[in-house]
Image (cartoon, rainbow, N blue to C red; front, top):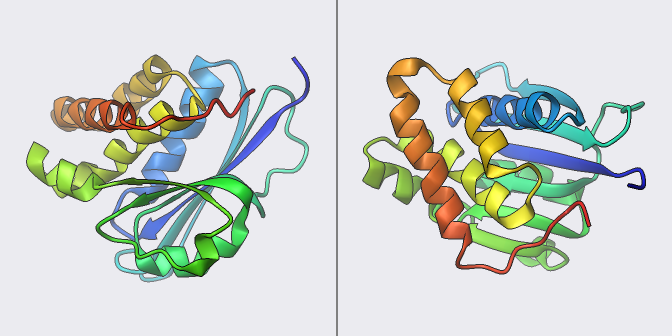
Length: 188
């Protein structure tokens, strides 16, 4: 396989689980797919309510530069994050948004756009806090960045046991929702 690196940015608001989503994705790639990954979280001083971002680089070879400046894949869960990070998406990159929380504009015209009502799905499951995990299932279904099983194992290892069943349902709901779309395999 030729050298391949996928750069990912997850953006949202503090309290939405953006940092956890980045950690879970990086872990799924490194631990369960035997890929190299780097995870760099960042969030405002206010933590809840401010911007939150996770940058994840995944490669089939050693990663020599860990920072993500131009994302191949971008997941956005708030308008504030969209406004702050959309300029960091590569032309023809994959943009995945929570359709109830993000209003797109002309800045997204260069993107391959996928929308999901992640927060609504999470609320139907009983708690909006798992919207980030709904998004992870959707991302796996759309991009094949890692396998569903690898992401599932990473979720199992990363969330509190008392919330595991809810998180696994959220992951599956997002993955199943992706079946409505023709996704892409980012490794090809």
